Image (cartoon, rainbow, N blue to C red; front, side, top):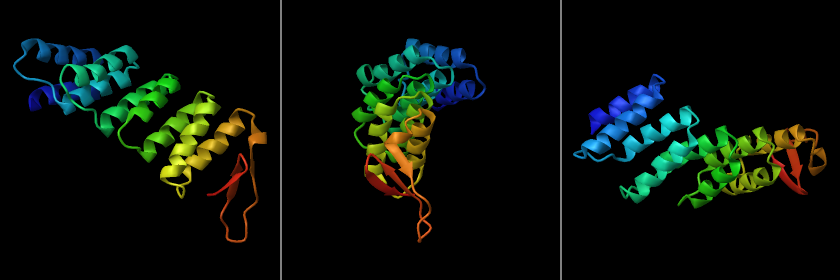
Length: 179
């Protein structure tokens, strides 16, 4: 198993995505060694780095249905990143909601993708979820401000001057948040 995972991982690292996926197929055909969580993480990374969405979906579903492997935060993160890279933020959001636990960095990554692809509606939801998990970390607030600024929706937010304590304060939809 370790040899197969190292082989697949090495191919991914060197940019040989097709060889990585072919190695997984060969491993499955031989049938003596079953892929594990690491194998699928390597394969999903291969799909991610080549923007191979259909392959990513196939392998993600296959690990659950065929092999009974429950995806962990790394596999979910890989798939969400794949969807975000190519602008499928709706699918990324659906998968993020499906996760058994919430993960702040994933919500921020999704928020960043919403900013990149001008999806303010989902961006607001990602912002709210991220702030529920960590309302003291500034990255979610900065993504939200930048999203409003780049989509010319400045009326939905305003940035006040630095207050006496030196903490910047942002108003998003009439709710104040400190940076």
